[in-house]
Amino acid sequence: MDLNYSAEDLAFRDQVRSYLEANLPSDLQHKVLNHKRMSKEDYVRWHKILAKQGWVGTGWPPQYGGTGWTPAQRHIFEEECARIGTPAILPFGVNMVAPVIMAFGNQAQKDYYLPRILNCDDWWCQGYSEPGSGSDLASLKTRAERDGDHYIVNGQKTWTTLAQHADMIFCLVRTDPNARKQEGISFLLIDMKTPGITVRPIIMLDEDHEVNEVFFDNVKVPVQNLIGEENKGWTYAKYLLGHERTNIAAVGRAKRELQFLKRVAANHQKNGQPLIHDPIYASKVATLEIEIMALEITVLRVISQDSGRPGPEASLLKIKGTEIQQRLTELMVEAVGPYAQPFDPAFLEGETEHSIMSDDDAAALASYYFNFRKTSIYGGSNEIQKNIITQMILGL
Ligand SMILES: Cc1cc2nc3c(=O)[nH]c(=O)nc-3n(C[C@H](O)[C@H](O)[C@H](O)COP(=O)(O)OP(=O)(O)OC[C@H]3O[C@@H](n4cnc5c(N)ncnc54)[C@H](O)[C@@H]3O)c2cc1C
View 1 (cartoon, rainbow, N blue to C red):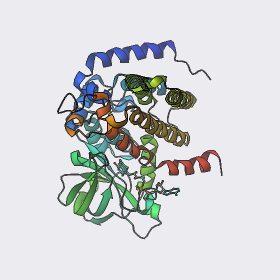
View 2 (spheres, rainbow, N blue to C red):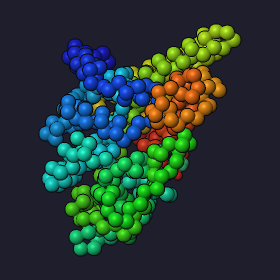
View 3 (cartoon, rainbow, N blue to C red):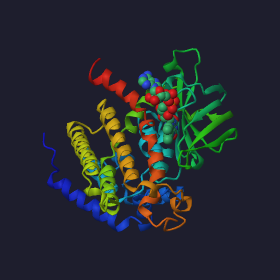
């Protein structure tokens, strides 16, 4: 197995790198590199810049406006974006609902939604989880009853990321309450402006408004917003989850954050010398660096094996990737100690350039640490990923 990049891959990397250097707005880069919060406008601005270049649909086939890149090229692109510090392209439209529309939607749905997703004309959110139906998603209760040309939707979704900005939500709804639980589910696209939808914020540990509850009270949804066949939604939902797991390891970002960690540890003192020279702290950083290198090799092995869309190995990448992300935030907070404590929302929101404390590197770290507790829960909790590994890889 050759894990080295080919000459063409290296040329592609240079092309991506020079494009990003020339086109990434410095204010967006500053926010990303300093762990500040991104606004809706920030995400949309970067999405539209990339859309102009034709580089949004990196996993899409060219017939729908995708790049048609190889798995290695996609990996290189993601690495370069992480290295320089671009905002994320949010996955809900491009990587989640779009592949489902391509695979199971009708022509009218493809023609209408796919170009709008590429250009970020609609902000999408994901309506899967419900209170009591997270890991056990197939137990979901939100009801959709057919009434002529419409479905009438009643129920509640929860943990809906950034639904406060959303124009559209893709939802799993129960259309047949009498069928076996996986068999009575359908996949609906719902306009968030429809009367009867209420979005309520859930404020996170770091006081950020990132997730929501979404309530449906007799919401009328046209039947043409059904994807594929009624009661076949579970098949489409599982197909989508396979796409959700691309780039789940986020190795590129881990490598960038490791450099940040080393810088912070070099700038903070312990016993009169830079913390990074303290043998105990240095060994923790070294252990983490080795973990990151091992994860990178694993990602490259997965990419070199097939289409780049990992099967059950995705669970392994998710667990290791999120453990590393959380460990990075732990070591950052450990490095700056009490300097992480002040809560400075104006700085986090990018309203002030400098923190009320003198140390800008430290000012966002407590928020970053708290926020990243989420990574071992969302996208299928790490315990559920371990179940998948025991069943699908170890065959237990
Ligand atoms: C920040 C954030 C953003 C999110 N965004 C979205 C979104 O946009 N859209 C959306 O639909 N959902 C979203 N989610 C929901 C997410 O998918 C669920 O939180 C996740 O699937 C876990 O479900 P749960 O919260 O109901 O926990 P539960 O399923 O109740 O699990 C509770 C605990 O029990 C463990 N557990 C459960 N079952 C098993 C088992 N069989 N074996 C071993 N351990 C088990 C879990 O690992 C967990 O530790 C988000 C969650 C978070 C935290």
